[in-house]
Image 1 (cartoon, rainbow, N blue to C red):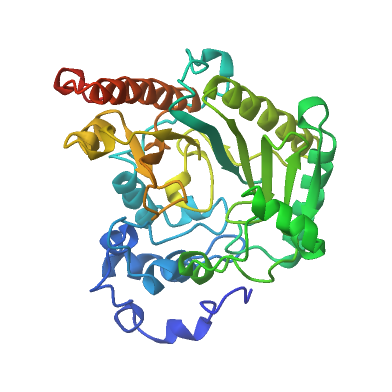
Image 2: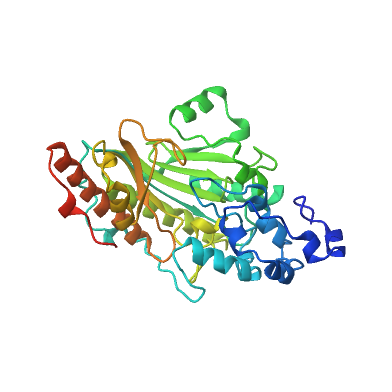
Length: 381
């Protein structure tokens, strides 16, 4: 199945040593884990859909790594990738997800009523709240390996599922290839539009093929619930709103996801999930919940404090600039989100954000008044 340039059966005429990639300058999880012995053992295996070891690792071979962020350096092409290539992927998952072992079981909890608080984050400090995740549809290969027909089938089912939503979820689908200039500009202004991937990580893994065929964006009329179709995952689901009501954002996220899955299940195509990896997604970094719950929060004083990084680590949170990964913060505003994906449930991860941000706002207020926060530094969660 010639989906990518790595499908070359003549390579097996060469020894594993001849074919083994040069990873000497690499800083990613794949390069750390891929020994010659593992390459030898797995190089002639493939999944039922035809995804090979070289497909798994290509993005990490072509992208040696990031100076600040340890990238993963591999992708899955289908649900079976994680089983067929487990000798490589289990150590990567363990390394990336804080020692998560091949025998560990993941917890899923999408009952929004289990979240404590979250409707009381101070809106003077919290500018916006959002929760996002990815979902993969059973029976189809994942975006690095998808065929045109598969993508179109996923888009068709997604449109059916999304157009059946009503009430607060009623909305409209915008296919990328048929979008008017006006619609495109509006989606850019709303920060909703995803464009053809320019990231070499995505391109090297084959996710940009046939762009923009069968890609699109759906959002509800209130612009508080958004679904991307056929980007890095089959579905990316995002709930958001201005202000600090994370409880309401998480409720909408959970209810919307469950409504969408119910329609897919009617077609016998639920979402990929197992009790070890949780929700199965393209990038091993997103396994588990795939969830990133984040707020844009003003912390001009705390962010300059010597203990800021330590506080984030202890709360199991991470910071980004508000423009996304690799951007600097402007005006002391940071995007603060959960650091974990695997091993903690959705409710637990959002709870960490709610509790942690609340504490950091208290710290910020104390620093504004010239006080010390040394006695407020939390224990390690």
